[in-house]
Image (cartoon, rainbow, N blue to C red):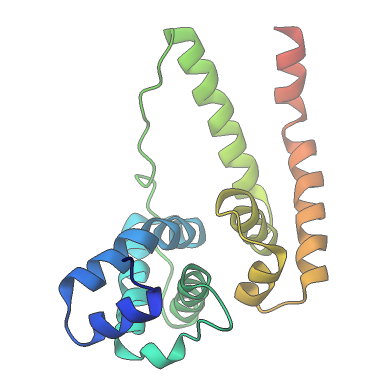
Length: 184
């Protein structure tokens, strides 16, 4: 019978490696992707991800399953780690953070897909940080407005406003891409 996250946390804290690995496998990608979004640095995202899981093991009582899902809590810890690092360290940039992947189809179609993905990546990167975080958490992590509000420590209506402004900005930034699609 599958164990609850609370049971897995208790077992991991007691040294059960399998329980820890189970928790890590379920949540590391979401935490890492958000950390990378914040830092744009593979080493920093890896460090923040590791710190999130260490924080859970060091002080498991900080996570309250009645208040948030574990993934939501870990992403909140990632955000706090990033803010702490920004206040106490010089930020480092790492341009090697994204690797290109091979896409099926013709070479021309692959180039078009990569061009679109690059345009979207640049448009999202051009958003103000708080809008970028809200869009990422909503669109890519599938979190609810309430979960995002908890992570960003703002009201749900503020999340909605940021999402609206971000989408409007993305429409403007990607307008040339839409025009290309209509001409092809």
